Image (cartoon, rainbow, N blue to C red; front, side, top):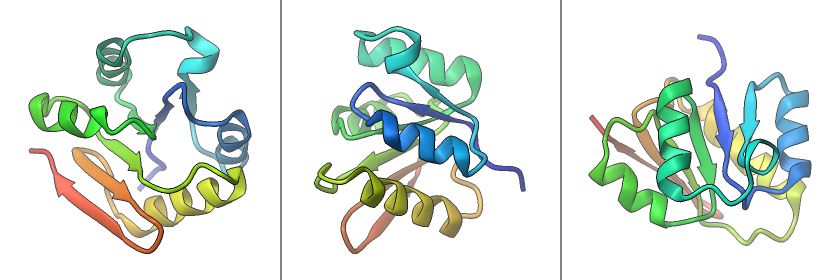
Length: 118
């Protein structure tokens, strides 16, 4: 299966986006496209472009459950201290999950929880 298309929320460090691109991921960035987008606008963009949102913002967990048309969300519940650590956790989630679309993927320090959206 080809790699999923991603959308980095504004709170994802630029170094993380660059590292994921270097790993061959097609990743768009709110920070590059239009900083200050509302959560709803981020969701609409993700739906329009079939991209899975990567974010630290737990509001997106609620949005995913209320709006199951969202292509998928990777919700990072880890300390955003080190960009390399963030990349490593995101990659471990993406590599472990066969099809990350239509899922809310909650990434913690030691666990990855997957909730199917539809």
